[in-house]
Length: 385
Ligand SMILES: C[S@@+](CC[C@H](N)C(=O)[O-])C[C@H]1O[C@@H](n2cnc3c(N)ncnc32)[C@H](O)[C@@H]1O
Ligand code: SF4
Image (cartoon, rainbow, N blue to C red; front, side, top):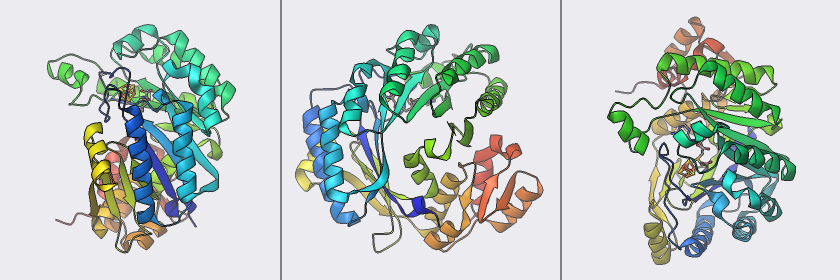
């Protein structure tokens, strides 16, 4: 029994940001005064989706971006109320929002609107590092945002970016220890990724070093896990650490366990299976806010594509997602949803090498395999060429 594998979530993408960070590869835009129109379009898109999913209560709603904390409490409340009216909410549904420190004055409004989990985009506590990352907040505001989030919300997560140029193990250790001392139940420390289509990507292509060298990044990854473990925030996924199982992100866990989710808002992706007649569908909304608005105005839906995945495509996705969890991929769910299994020769070989183990119907990475998570998951996907 794996409740999240059969659950339904809702992802709402709010694409606007006050400033575009030079490392960010998400679907983001500067606001152009179309916020109210976009809100109405997202509400209409949700109604259109309801016809596709049928009646299934939501296990989670996640407001991501972009910067959804640029929305007002009233706008967020309209979205939550509409979702609840269309689908209903599971008892204990997680309703999460990604909150930038600059919007700290509004955190209380978000809770009043129905948000019950805040994920604060701190990234660093160090002024120079925040400047280097092109953030529009400083260390004191980051600290105030964490304190405020924890004062108004029981479930708080903190996003950090490490393995930045010039960062040493001792400076990261001090920063991470200070973050952990706030006592939040969840932290997501991400290694800085240089994405080609960003300002950092273009600068790196010209030879600038913007992240840590590979060896140091691997050391920082190990250090992050040691320090978080020692503080009682063990990892449950490569970049996600929680104090208790209930502190884990239910919405993200739904992705990794292979549940269904609807994606609304520009560029949002979704996966819908069980309620449709054939296989799993991969869905994607129009990326540009204007194109999304036009599509919803014309057809009631913001979708640009709705594609049936073949059983083997679905299997590959489920293996790659499931193996990100430290407690591993649920083999029964994989079999039930796709009729297929992992590559059994690879499973035997990787088990023999001490990189994975099969336990309680799941296959999971052993500590020695965690640093090679991507390669190992890839090997578990049968080669069909
Ligand atoms: C899409 S962002 C939205 C959150 C919010 N707008 C913010 O910036 O705080 C979600 C998280 O992804 C992480 N992130 C985005 N781009 C990244 C990159 N290139 N490398 C590592 N982490 C990244 C950041 O930690 C960020 O908080
Ligand atoms: S990191 Fe956050 S604030 Fe910066 S551009 Fe990306 S989504 Fe916007």
